[in-house]
Every structure is written in structure tokens, then in C-alpha cells.
Length: 589
Image (cartoon, rainbow, N blue to C red; front, side, top):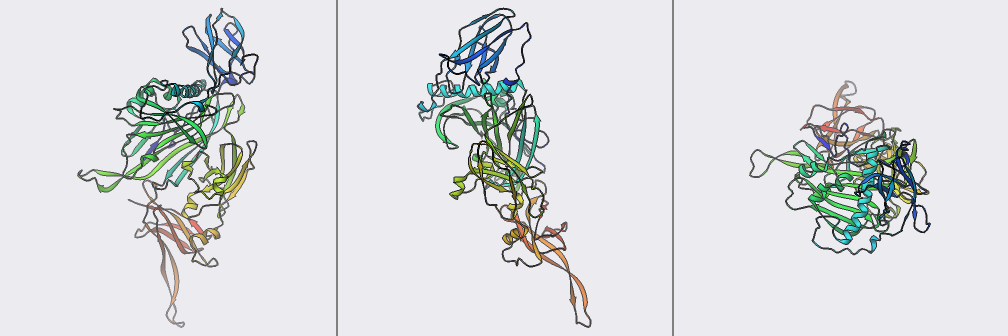
């Protein structure tokens, strides 16, 4: 049985589009024709205060509608084009400050008006807001004084994202991945990754809000699943507000005090819907994350709803718009079991076999050939396989705080942390978005998982947004052999085969599969005077564990060996040239 797994719209190949990327364009503003009406000048704080950099300014017509917008430059300078003569106002919006609208300006045909906009610095102090815990859920995020204050800051961030995406003038480098996760432990069973450069279109664009609210945020069928996450346009849409109710909560997220705008579907919604939280930092009022969970999803047996959802991490370009820097979408993979659902003759019961997680990271942004720093610092390096000496692709790199590693806290899975990456075909990796500090870098790979090995974490220091490039190696073949076959002599002439038993149709690991290695040996029989040489088969075997891993020790070096599920004629041929070899076995249903 084949499967299709998507998490967005218009995926390329089997890749899942899972994020909203926005395009800054203040640096690429094009001068209006000479005959056009322009309003330009400087935005600064009142009383001859400092220029306001990165302020989002809009040109409002006589009806109060925004008809042109841009960001102020580092020195507070701006320039806007008016579509015709008339009366206009300037609105200045800054994250963490109250909005400001000027008095009207009269602009005549062809006029170039130069002005200075002075804005009172009135900070928005989210930390001072009183958050009451109650069971009520407001119909609109602009209701209630505290909720309305927080929503206004979120709205400003999302509006810049929508505006910048519409300009479409940024190119970026994008690293995407797909992971198949163990259904019980969420450890990675398989991983694929790719890097896309010079991408001009956003890598993720949600369906229109009307379609999502009418048809739902996912389409789940017997052999396919398509999950959608909302982009900034959807979150700002009247359709989203009309189908959700809203609340406010205070919590610590990623070691930072935050206020969260909660949302959940209104009663009577029977399509697959979403609930979640928009998290804003209390100190800066900046939008940090949007966490999403799916409601009304048809669940395979043994699946857990808490593992199904999406996570978008927001960042901001210098003096520019917000964008989604990191993202992932996770959903269940089901298959049909041989057991029938009680009372429903002939209907097979869907069973959870794994979770699929798709996501990515924006690593570089370019506008007009100029590179803009994305996120915080980055850790880069290359990983090599000590057994073959070749670069090791498809390895997960996980970065966490060094203090957590020094305290021997359990190392998190890549599916659960914001700072992770997957090595590319050249073994290279980059983990971006890290503030200056000391970190622990861990490595995982299906080969190492099959051998039951996890590398020790490497200490990494980021200072001034940079760190020294790393060159990492997996353990040697002898070290791996001693780990997987501790009772075997390290000086003998045998090695080991490790791998996963997999379903031939889905490629997913299978537990409790007996796997055997078979080879031919020649033996002398009879007396020394009448010796006869005969050829016999020898066997070594092992069963796959609950994660589908198997280990077979005692396999001779330098001899042709057949590897197969026990009782099956079809086999894979291999020859051990080192003390350990990796081969997966595929089991026909």
C-alpha cells in the first residue's frame, strides 16, 4: 500500500510545505515616477528625540484605509507615494509601543511633500497586564482590555508578514526535512532533508481562510493525509475570528516570560479544526511562536492527540518585517490491521504505525544581492562516517543548553526542540537562530540507532553570533562492534550486521521479525587418508526489537553472506569488509 503525506499546499515531489516565509522589501523601495505625489521625511520621537528605525508606517486615505506602507530606515527616513492629490495621514506602528496617527496633510497634484513625524514614546507593558483565568472564551480578540492590548501587538507583527510577502522581493535559503517518528517514543526512524537556495516564493502558503473554515484544516483518507497550518493571512482573517473564540494566559515558554492569546473552535464545528496559542514576549511584546493542535482528526488506534500539531517560530529581520524562521507539522500515519472492529463485520481497524513530521528552517535572506542576518548565531560543521570515511547524510543534529547536558537531563529528540538540523549529502549542517552562549550538540542517525549507539554531546560556544566550524566523526567499526556484540572477541574474524526490519510497502520498522544471515563453509569429513570436502550452510540470527532494530553477531569477515527474514528465500547479498555493516531487511506483507 502506498501513502501520500502532505502538510501544505502544492508540495514539490514528496516534500511537505510547512511554513510561512515573508519577504522584506523596505530596502528595495523604488522611487515613484517624477509626476507622482510623494510624502517623505523622517520619523523620530517627540522633542527632537532619536530617529525611529524599523517603524511600520502606512499612508491612510480620507476613509482611514492604508493604501501604501513601508518600514523606516535606520535613520528614520521614509518615502511613500500617494495615488493622487488629496488629504492623507501617516500612521506609525512599532512593536511594544502605542500606535500614532498624524494630523492630515493636503497633497496637490505632482507635489513632493517633506515632513518630520514626531511620535510620543508610549511603551506597551505586557508584564503589567492582569490575566484572569476563567472558562470564558471571547468571540473576538479585540474584546477585553488585556486581550485587546496583546492582540494589537500580535496583529502588528502579522500585518508586517502579510505586507512583506506581497512584495515578493526577497530570496532566501531554506532547509527542509521529513522525519518518520517512532509511535511510542517519538525517536526518529527515518529522515530526509534538502536545501533550496534562491527561493523567491514563500515555502508555505495556507489555503484561503474561507476554504479552511468550511472544509477543515486536514483531509484524511485511507491511504493519504493532507494537513494545513494557518499563515498570517488566515490568522488575521474575519473567517478565522468568526469560527474561533479567544482567551489570554501567562506562562514561561522557552525560558522566557510570555503572554499567550489562546484560540479554540466555537461549538458546533464538525470539520477538522485547530486550537492553539500565539505567544508574545512580555518584555518586548514581540511575537515568538504559534503552537497549534488539531481537533476532530480521525485517529488510528493507539495514536495520541497531544503528539499531533504544528509549531511556528517567528523572528524579525533587522528593522523589517516578521517571518517564520522555523516550523514543523506532525500527524499520524495509519495502516489497516488484520483485526476487525468489534461489531462491524468486514471493516478493518486503522492502526498507528508512526508519526510523520515535516518542517524546515530559513538560514539566509538576500535582497538586491545584499545578505541579511537571519535569527541569531549559527553552529556549522560536517559529519563523517568513521567506518567508510565518507560524509554521513541524514543525521539529526540537536543543540540544547550546556547546563542541561551538564546536569545529565535526558537529551531531547529533534522533534521536540527548536534548534536542530539534518546533515545534507555532503555531511554538512547548520543550526541557526542561537543566541550567544554555551551549548551541547548531539548527533543521531538511523545507523547509530540500529547499533544502539548515541554519541556524546560536543560543547559549542557561540560568541558574536559565530562559532568555530565542527568536524565530527562517528565511532570506529571496532568500537561499534564491541558495543553491539560485547561477548564476541575483539580480535576474532567475525563481525556483525545491524539494521531495521521494515515493511516492504511503507518502509516503516517492524518489531518481532526473525532475521538470519546464511553463508557457506567447506568442511573435511572422513579419515585423513580418505578425506572428503563438503559444503555446508551456517546460520546466525536475531529478532528485531520493539523499534524494529536487529543485530546479528558472528558473521564471518570477507565471505559472501545472504541476509533475509527467516523462512524467506529472497535475500540480500553482502560481504563484511569491516567489523560492522548496516543493512535493512524488507518484509513482504
